[in-house]
Image (cartoon, rainbow, N blue to C red; front, side):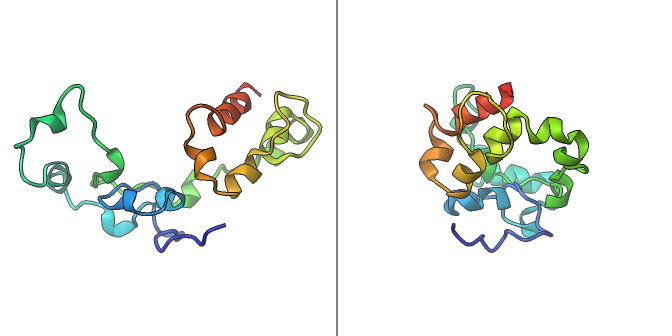
Length: 149
């Protein structure tokens, strides 16, 4: 498993967007780019969308595409601790969760009998780009069946 990037620190807000984020490895995208990426005001955000001013209409075309990961925003996203549930599902639901399909498909634990016998946690930890980015299977199918459970 690759070492976490320089911005993967507890005090940095995960998912904080900024120019240059796409240049980092995919495994670091959830780390964001750190507190320095938070814009001081909305004009900085506008400048990151239109670095040369509003001269290129294709950037705002109805059929155009804009990469939201590259736009600095004036809002600091929550740090990692705010994304964590307050109560672990094993504590909240006990055996119902531990032996259910959700836990079986995610961690390979318990005796659930849901669709698939995969271990999504292991697949995610292996860091396969094909697993994470394929739209024809892999993580999308696993998340679908996990959601069904």
